[in-house]
Amino acid sequence: MYTEKQQVAVKSGKVEVGRIQEAESKPYTLLPSERLTLNSSTGQFVKDKFENESTYTTPQMADDILVFRNVSLSYVLDSLSNMYDIKIRFDRDQLNQCKATLPLPKGSIYDKLFIISRTTGLRYKIEEQTIVVDGTCSGSREEIR
Image 1: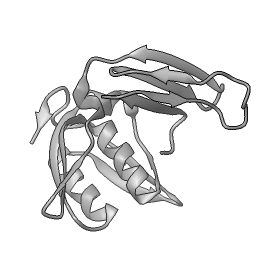
Image 2: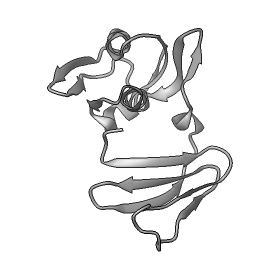
Image 3: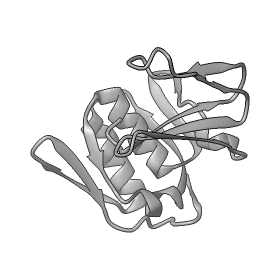
């Protein structure tokens, strides 16, 4: 993921997170509904709780279709960024407000972005090695299906 903040969120079980380079530092232990955020710019960790379980729902594959259920468009774009190992730049604050349920068929990231742009009203363009997504979500603060 190409963001300044990296997060680990635990839905169930127990996870320990620490720095590999700092063997003497004590790892953070996370329990269900806890998350740890690393600000890459400052190197600082922040541990807190989260309530909205759908924010951390893993996309499901069904019959070669990737399905996101009631998640923010920020989450969708971050997931695609991770899946395709490509940088995607967008207005995180705005797209956190737009929830979507999206079935995305198997194919390239551009196939998926085309569907997202048609469904949400967002636009995308390619600038060097980065995909830039902009515009206002037509379903802002509402769920898009």
